[in-house]
Length: 485
Image (cartoon, rainbow, N blue to C red):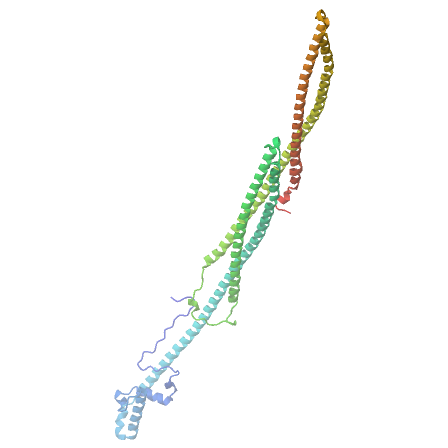
């Protein structure tokens, strides 16, 4: 079966005769004169005995020509040999030989014509086939260029998206780093507040609500910092993955630009183009590393990988945004809780200090009055000395009464009663003086306790109000806690 567009194979045969003369061509025999050719043709009808010779072997045509000349000479110039004329060709043989030559000539010319026509048709068909094949190849290269242009546009679009995503993730990462740096200030403030409150004295060194909230604030800030660091590490790893995907896309795009340039040059090559040449054996060399399916799959996989990394990066950016808002709200809420606890504690300590001051004032007043009382008791004791001396002196003087005059009369009984009454008064006044002095000691001790407690409260107020609250005024704002400056 012949392929469509190809020429049919023609069969060329020689005439079926033992005396076929070759066609006129570049053979040397075709350039002989007609007389010699006729003689050579006539000699083919001679008997074989006329072609024998004692000379060295020559070519058949040379032997036939020499024998024919010899026969002609003998026949023409020796009458005794005229019988040899009976061996000549007849006119029928001559005409028959001519007809055979005519037919052979016509057959050769017909074969040559068929060969020429078939060859021209073959040349035309092969020219058309070559042209169609070249057009098909150019079309395939053009389609390949379209595929390359399509994937180039997809790669360029994906690279632009990846560059935008990398810039967005870098910006969010920068905000996260700023927010993480901003948490160091509140963390130091919270620790400083705890250190300052450790300087509270005596009874004020209590584990109150302010201390609990400060400890919780430190834990909240540390927790926020830890979550920020984890997301920061993930952001750095994601940026590395994004840049790796971008590198693969750019390398693929660069390869496709080179392939487009090469295929474009091949697509516009024509038979008249410069720079074309023979490269023997190039069709047996297969330098390809991929197939069309694997070629498109490679680029598609790169784009899918980039899209996957972009999706992960976008998700991470959302997580960072949520984390920044969450941590800022947590720190602000805890900051406000600590401030409220500080305000309540300062107010409570201030009220306690005011109460202590009032009690101290009353105690001082009572101490003054007690001291006055003690002075009054001492004066009263001093005032009882003279009446006691008078009464005792009277009794001592009346003991000198002589004889019967030394009787227990009413004055004697009255003096005894007076002395005992004054002594009882002095005893009671001394007891009251001791009580007053003890009360004064208690009041003085209470005064010292109140004054010490006042100093403790003043120290606590100074630490909470002046030291801690003054530092807590520099807490970062909400925009700074989410990474904006």
